Picture 1 (cartoon, rainbow, N blue to C red):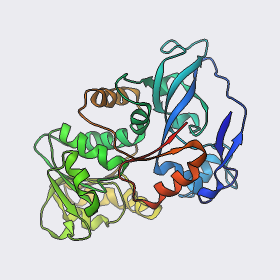
Picture 2: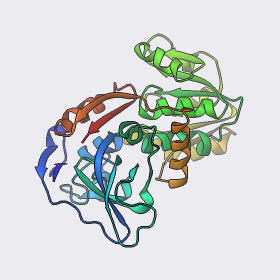
Picture 3: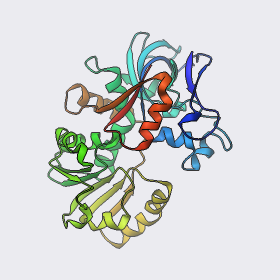
Length: 323
């Protein structure tokens, strides 16, 4: 089968199409004929070994554990292991296969039975593949980390990316009043997703407006912890979703100290695959209560170009690779 592999860490050029052995499902595994894959920051960070901890997970000097990227997949069940009970060949499925060491950028992928759910018939493979990691990260940030309640004021910084577009919609679904921060070119997209207020970061600094928020979801690391704290209500919560290694370290180290000093809290969001939550989001998607925003689509052989575009940081929604 064809797969996109990388044998060393580095820029998108390290991604190469190769002919590799087709995987064989174990007793509890499902073999998927992949139809669509969505790319995430986790992919390019693993590709570049950034942060350095990625090397401890996959291989210190070169990739070993993970040699094909792509954790969000959608496709058709080709075969199942002898102990699989939830699926059969021909089923249309999708899920987050992070626990199976990525591997979605290929014609076939073996995944654990519990990593997948059935795809709604009225949702395309591309729309389904876009959902798992970004959608669950947004859900866990809003519902679990920030405990967003109906009527609260929520600000989403980085609102036009993969996580941000879902976060706007999920916050609205939870009953919050949403302020989205994004570029001027993406303001209409944010409004179409339900944002009540939209701030063009090139024209207005939300940290100096004097407006306070019950919850702030930071999908990028463009602001300091102090700036975010200044914009919180007395018992507000800042949930950090994205940022570089330095900012993550600061949040992990200083967040608990800041939280001790006042009722304001700073928390980091670590989203793990969760079948129940994915089914919840899948139902919302099928019912039209949320939608997947897809910026660009690339064929499998152009995966390096897709990764390059994602890494540039200007995608409005998700970047999809079709197989």
